[in-house]
Image (cartoon, rainbow, N blue to C red; front, side):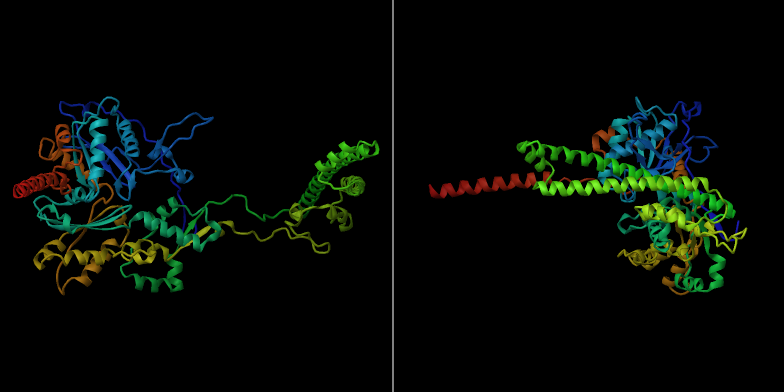
Length: 607
């Protein structure tokens, strides 16, 4: 493999096996199910009590589904996650229950949950007799939580549920015991980037901010850049391959402007450019072949062309003869004196007079005669070509009749695909070969830093939003100086979109520019930015398994509604729905009473 040349893996997801729950998950107390419901990937697994809670989530799959197409193959049902295999052939059919990072489609969310329960070995036909810990978006809309609670309690009959924020679960999973409970979380995922201040162990929801940019927008931006750069490979530059480039070949520049200056140096470019190898056919075009084989191919192509032309002439001759026969039948009606039928036939032929009919008959007759002569001449030429099998260069005079018979230049293109060797200079044995591999390479240079940069400079893609640095400064300015000092001592990075090399150094550089001189701060990257949310939810479920203050039971759901939430260290802030109608009814009753009193006094005065 040449230097800096990387083939696309084009990884195809393997279908998930249907696992068995096993006796460990059927103890005296039901084992909680932990579901990290992400907009890019869903993760599901068990929270087993004991010294060894178990490995990583037993199920990880893309949070998309596609309706199966019926027909001859049978009416296949909807396919979910890893059962889809490669996503690109089905890209136009993919559907997601999420709008940004908020689930809004109840039917598609039910498909994802069915897939999770089925492959974890949980029967969802009767009821799912396990508590569920479910992640949700920051400041999740009440409608979304109400929809999810209704689905879990009414459709699956679960005993209780707890909701939490994925980035907060990740934060508490990485926080050492008895450490400070203040911090600032920067969570960047597939659709959004959030900055969450944590004060005294609880989320300060009033000062949370969201940037509507993430890995999805970076992949789309990278796809547009490379499609503009390589218009000949539009179909090969797919979103799946762009995500592969982002995950394995991109990085965040510590100083974006300075890094672009480095890329202008030819030596730096040659050393750091990544050449992504697209798949290409193994049979090279323009491969070297002997001169005799080339001449044999030309003769074979010429014969095919002559046969094609002869077939077309025969078909055209047959059509002309049929039309000429119909016109002669009409002319016989005129000769027999059947004028009514003759005029009716003329109208069907779109002709106005017998003279026009005679003119058409003469033209068709001459065309038929010429076609017959050409067919005879072509047969003679074909016979001569078959007899003449000399390996020398064919005589061009014998090719002239066939050139006249070609009706379309497209039919004759194979004759000019390879140049005829000159008679006095034989073709060399080895000819230069066109390098298909180099033609199918994408040179990814500055694109390696331009795509991840959009979360720091959204203006690169035309978004009128503030980047991470500006939003971070805005949030810190809303707090007093002493609170700012506490927050910047624990800045925590999590989410799949923070895994770029150089991300931590870039955040430290931005903080160094915005913080006062000689002030201190600390930036920590999650040990596993992708899976720590699930690990944190699992740890939380084991720590609060018997804590009724953290779980929403079915009775509480029926009493207080689907949007009800019990707050805990990793949850959103519960904001109940206020119903102004009751207050308005009371005020209407008071106004009615006052109106009645006023009308009574008016009646007394009139009396």
